[in-house]
Image (tube, rainbow, N blue to C red; front, side):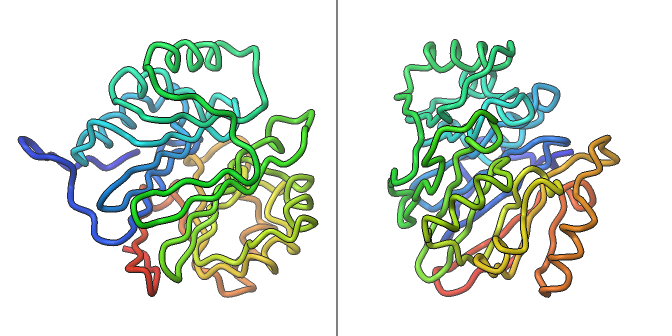
Amino acid sequence: MIALFLLTGCGPRPVEGLEVRILDVGQGDAALIRTAEASLLIDAGPNAAEEELCAALTALGLKQIDTVIFTHPDEDHIGGGDLLLERFAVGTIYLSPATSEESSFTRLLEGAARSGAAVRVGKAGERFALGGAAVTLLAPSAAYNDANNASIVTRIDYGATSTLFMGDAEVEAEAALLAAHADLHVDLLKLGHHGADTSTTDALLDAVQPRFAAISCGKANTYGHPARRVIDALTARGIAIGRTDREGTLVYHSDGAKLWRE
């Protein structure tokens, strides 16, 4: 699970350039992206890892988070959201247009209302600054019956470097991105749906051409994530693979000219 660093009596750990942390929250998703001036959290993992998520953020010296994106309402992406909003001051929340009748989604909406954060529905074309980085929401651009395909897809540009976070977007949403001729070429790709066979098509990889691929999934998970086809496709292209189930939290850095893994 999440490695903790014991920091006491200090503010947030200083960040130079752009830092991307794909946090180990077991079978779920949570990624912290920071610059010296601002912070963004994409998803908050499952309820089972909410205490560890909050502890990891606290250990980094965080007391507030400028923006939180909940890519879609599946429990393994939003389960820790209500506790997160209770423990940390959050400026803006982006929600997928998809909704859910699950209790985790109800708790998230109640927590968002109590938090006082501005709540927006994320859609393609939304842009905001993350300190010196530029954040663009590339999806969703259409209505889907499936919550996974309604995931918010996020691109972050910092200087000449870039990252792409796919949420749980599957083949249909990937095809829509490609058809829209979105700018998909990036240095780091956070794979969709934990590396499942339902996502990360050859067509997407050919458009993105990442140097690094990050996969967030739980050890010995019952879903078979990541799929062998996906791992083979990444390996065949010479893409450096990081997996939270085998390596724990994955950390990447950018100085604006190049992006590398810690």
